[in-house]
Image (cartoon, rainbow, N blue to C red; front, side, top):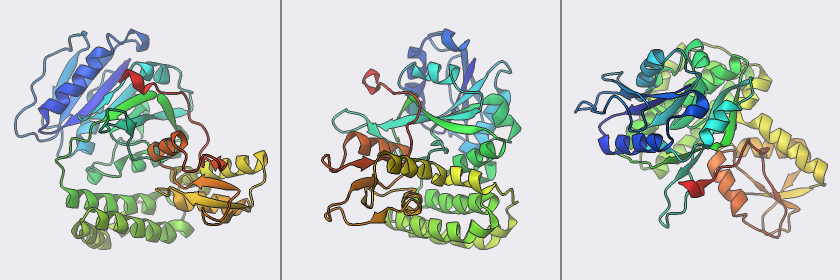
Length: 369
């Protein structure tokens, strides 16, 4: 059995769309049935939905579930049916595209504690393209599945994080518990990105929460480097979003809150899984085994580019310009969506392409969207 947990606030049309998509998946017999839990965090008008979807899947609403999506999700998880094996965590503007989700959950390895979805966003020409967010073992908060007992055992989301970066903190604790986070492309989700959020507040929380996560889980000798790198990257993001006020507010917050974070350092190898360095190393070693690469261009950089470069350096690959006849182009991001887009549309088809992350499970079928 599975429990869909949908966090919502003041977006009844988006919620209705997501509920309709779940209805279209039927009675969920393949996974032993399902329930939907709508967790309303402080909507101005109370959420009103029926006791069941037309397919017969029961629906319950938790009103005033908490002041933020993280708190609301936790409240919903605590009320989930004890028979439920998985919590499918969705935002109200994200819906599953097809029943491939069922196979992903049913066939998950025992070591897999959470499953990340392949997340799409609507494109102007109606052809789905991938959304941003996540890393190899960090799912995007709008679309992930976590074993119910594990979610409760590790404490769920940190409600103090509210929204933005809370999934990375949760995934670090899942790894600390000895489990894995696995991308399974059969779990396909459309993130409609309804908007309506305060960008300045979003940046403030994201910067603060990212540093909190590093402070809590990084090995002691790596904390300062990771914090400095993250702040530099997020400063660029804040400037691009015209939200430097939020960045500056986060820095002020961190002056007070960073030292208060309780340390639960991960072993170095496990921290490398959180950052994606572990996966990048595997990919670079595999690329070298398949044929010597002396020089490579790093193209289409994004989150995790530092890890890709470090892993390449460790196996003896030197960086050169894309115009300087490289032996290969290395996709310089570990973010699943942009990485999959780069695979499908290689920047230089006649040049060997190295993907810095080994194949995930399954294949999605976005045509069924």
